[in-house]
Image (tube, rainbow, N blue to C red; front, side, top):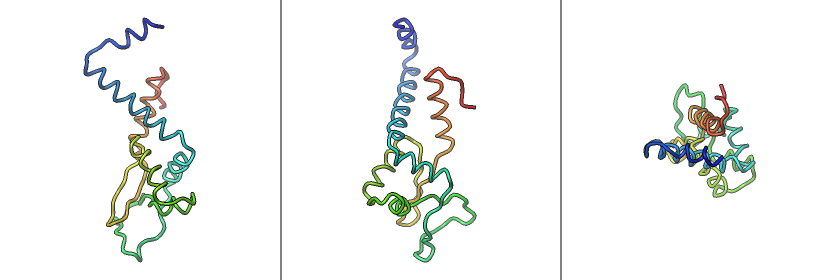
Length: 134
């Protein structure tokens, strides 16, 4: 086993930095997915749920946009938590690269970053020696 570790550590500095970056991403993803609230938030985003209607409050919306994202108020209502706790959970998901934030006026809307999620899952499979998820 020790030989395998020594062999895998050989390579150029560039390869090692890339490997370390991937490992850091995987750790952030693991931390993000370690809380059931964050997993449920991702599920809500994956469903394509859109937020409460703010059209009468002047929130700008992109015409023809299918995925408008979810604002913090939707998560507050669903989980019965305050804005600061929801923001903490959203920050973990953003740090892991799983969620994107789009600002519209003074409101922020959150949705999944599907290509990034797929890349992270493929990287996880690669690091664990499994075949690609496809």
